[in-house]
Length: 379
Image 1: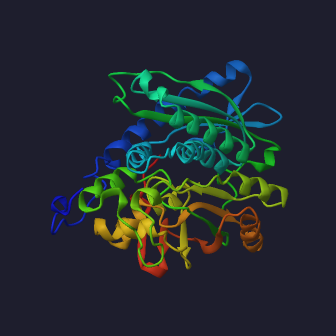
Image 2: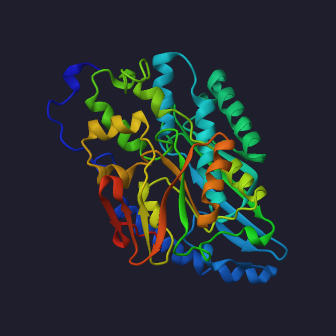
Image 3: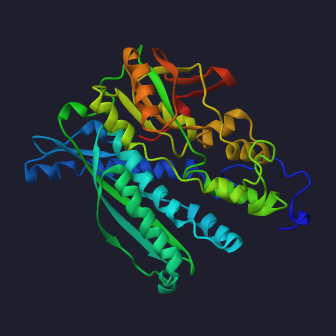
């Protein structure tokens, strides 16, 4: 992309300009949740019941007697488009990392309710049969999927590989994963009933953009004279291109939650920080004030996006993970051990704040940003 394509004074680039408007999407989610809730009585025909508190959480939980079953389905989104364009520029396939991203979208949601991931299913919908004819790309997807399953200790049960010409664009693929897990023993259930004032907020580090905010990241390309090959931080990370930085795989956080259980730590609540950025810390339905005193380092690619999209801190933290990929709300006396357990699994972590009684709000004190109850409506 030549410099002539970059606007001289482009102004702020919003998420809505990139084609994603949560004000339109979220009401549908709420409507769907209400319709879905009305079907819960069907479980009674089989002798089971739902865990009603899991409605509106990141995974759905069913009580089957001796243990709970949790399930989730998640779509990767548009990150594969970046992999395709970077493959053209670099001659290598990036689909091993894309596979990990897809599984992470499902697994990292499943573990928020205290579940141990058990089985993953694949949904790979291509725009035509030709997509599967690129052996390097297809085998990278298979190998990356298998490796991510091994990291999480899950079985890859099967999947669906439809060729959907006319629905999915030719040469593209739509990737999704479903995951089923067990909450066993039942004491591992984490749907927020234990959350209380005085709890500590531990944030696990992000590796980069993960798989949310890619619509914005791709729209930003119009402003970059060197396109995907633009360096994001020439001084501290010479040679790291925008495209490669975006394609850093999403961490799989389930080894951390499994290690926490082994250490005798049961989180009082968890939040996977994906779409809606740090507003996801407000996900719990109760009225609490979440006071953040320490923020993690912001990955270079997210600093780059904030700068070039001309976002202030409030906009950036409402859209992107800004260095925090997962939040654990734990008893204050467990906070330091939680950090140590995460770090032992190779995941950076820090005690970031506290839960207080009071109005429902998130106060990110180091950057002077506040989000209130009206900034996140998912129920």
